[in-house]
Amino acid sequence: MWIAFVSALGWGVMPILAQWTKAGPREQLLGTSAGAVLFAAGLYAASPTVFSPGPYMISLISGILWAVGQWLQFEAFQRIRVSVAIPFICGLQLTGTTLFAALALGEWSTRFQLLLGTAALALVLAGVLLTSLQERSAGTKHGLTPGQLSILLCSALALTGYVVINQWFDISGLAVILPQSAGMFLAAITIGLLAGKRPSPRMVIRNLATGLAWSVANLALFVANGRIGVAASFPVSQVSIVIATVGSILIFKEKKSAAVWMRVLLGSTVLMAGVFLIGLTKS
Image (cartoon, rainbow, N blue to C red; front, side, top):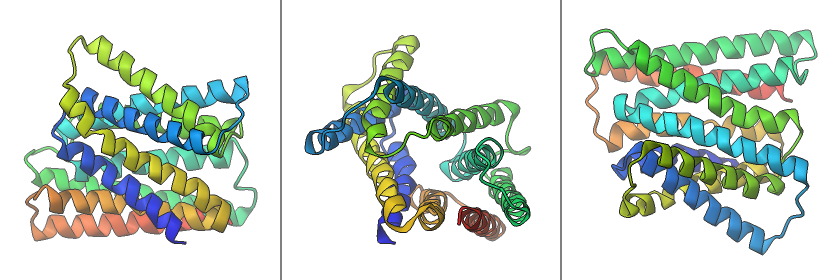
């Protein structure tokens, strides 16, 4: 079970590490994807994998979708606090991937799974709403603006696509990691070139640790799925949402009233209850 907590810890500290570097979104993305490529190359050197053209291209596209979604997430961090953006994006991504698995892949084949899954998604969305309400007490009078919501929604959509495309083509395991990281890096370079501004090498290097944290979490989840099954590993890995939300508040010393803290903790609890129920539908 501990390997699933490694996944949760890696994904939980990743956005905190990225924000801590004080780099721009494109530098954060380039450094993160470069760290992922280095990790994947080392893993491939230690355990060579034979690639087929079809799965390789699908995994490459998956990495591109990740890069777009992660870039928008980093952009959101510049406008919205991490403690607000993370539960919103991750909650919607979780909703999207779960609905895809249920409707497209037919994972909810019984009435019990349908009822349980519907209740789970309702809890996830309620948790997202509760945690996002803290923004009303964090410097804005009207909560999230339409522009901020657009960034969050587009980020969640792209990150959902990065997960479901591999599910749709039934591609998993170590064969995904290297081409996926290559797609991440290529997309990061393209986004940087389109910006027309030269990134700071120092800031990019500082974000290599962000990519390593993501890569370790990604590998840990693959291992956990094989050892204890998706039903057990998946809910544990999603504890990353709570780690990122609460951790960012404490590390960046965000000032929160007692009422806001209650909403954050209640929202996180409700969201995790939904995650636990989603895990039960996978049993």
